[in-house]
Image (cartoon, helix red, strand yellow):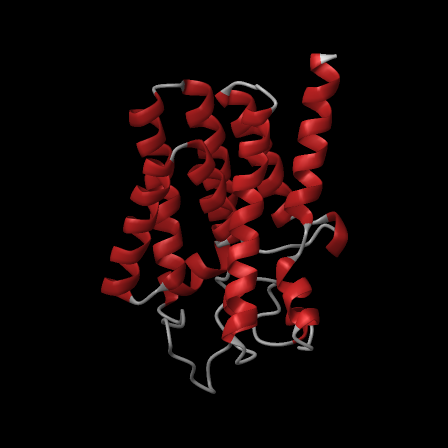
Length: 209
């Protein structure tokens, strides 16, 4: 029975993670599908390009909440922290490879933040501080996301002391970094767009959640 519940938890977490809040919020506010403009990425930053800050905020909150929710549900069902982390990983994978979007999704920054916030708020705070510092200094959102991805598993290791949980968070960070491969290339080439900077001669940056 416990194994069946464990499998159902992971499947449910994947489906919850697959909910494309960028598209849901866009439909609520009568906006175009976010995959049809900007970077084409179903994330909060791209929704913000529509000019509707409320829709972008709803997207960000929804993507973050779904990551936190599955970890919380795992706790309610009396699963241990490792299982809760696996549920979070399943939700993150659902966001990145959404079944509702033909296995295409966002970059996963907001969902990853929600997952680690559910595991331990201190990890989320440390990752968010890392993101803010790099974003303020460099004005590259993608570089900030990559720094947060680097910090998260390190802080998890120090705080939790649990190898399995640390490896799960590391897996999330590695997938997030892989999803930012194009951004890494543009950073190295010096062509990555900065926060708030949109030149007509440059392609839209592709670093959304």
